[in-house]
Every structure is written in structure tokens, then in C-alpha cells.
Length: 200
Image (cartoon, rainbow, N blue to C red; front, side):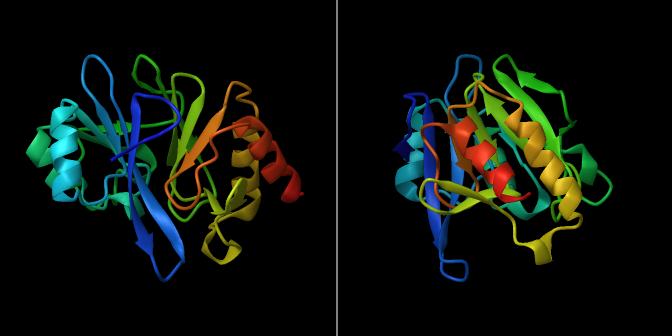
């Protein structure tokens, strides 16, 4: 796994040829149990690295298209699986807990839910007040610049734009780490403002 902009945040990735971008999974290392977000399959190297960092106590899935290898990793680490409450009735795997807007998974991990994406109640996660991890709606197909999920995949463009506006109200964001595409490691709040302005 790669260490990111903070020494307690790690990432592993997989290049998707169809979309010509990387898919990412994230690990937040913390006292009281590490947290994995949207886990892709782990290579033998990354699995060994995860074990050396203390495994995981929770796996958070931002939306049903990002289940990826959650069940396997949760079984190996004995982690609980947390998913979006907006998909509770149709989610394809069992979750130990459902998350909604305003929830706090643990101290330092705040939950926001977005509307208008391809799945209802898609989650974004704010770690330690300054790092935003997104699922599908907010992404980055070009380095240093955020974009929105393509219109043809949105359920409600107006609601999606309002969701981006909601994120711009979090002024402490320094980094935006998308599930799909390039991470933005600096001026994350500004990048979100620029995204919102481009949607007007």
C-alpha cells in the first residue's frame, strides 16, 4: 500500500482500462481499530502490509458499486461492514450497520450522504476534519481537477449539484480522495468550489 499525504492514511489501486483511470481503496490507521474504505482485492504484498499495520475493525462501503472485495477482507480481518442506509433494502451483501448523513462512525470520521448519484444515499467520509473520501459522484479524471459522474449515469442532476454545494460548505477540507481517478492532496476545498462553479 502507498502512504498518502498523512502518515496514517494508505491507498491501494487498480487501473481500469474501460474508464482509463485508477480505482482506489483507502485505509485509515488509528488507535481503536483501523478502517478500510471501498476495498479492492489485496495483493499478497498489500495483505501482508495490512496485517503489519494492525488489520481492520471496520469496512465502510460508500455505495453498492464499490462493494468490491469487502466480504473477503472483512472475513479475514473480522471487521464489521458498514454501508449506506439509502440502499438498505437492495444492498447485495449483509451489513452490520447502516450509515446516513450526520453519522459519526468513530471519533474523527464523519459521514455525509449525497443525492442524485447512480445509487441513493451515496456516502462521503470526512477523516480528521480535513480529508474527504468520495465514492462515485465526485471523482477526478484529470490531475488536480475534480469532476462529476457523467450525466447519463446520474439519477438527478439537480440533486447531484446540490450535493456538491453541500460539500463546499465544509471549509476545512484540504484533500479529496476519490474512489475513481486522481486524488487532490492540496486545496481540496478550492477544488470542490471550482467543481461547483463549473456545474452552474
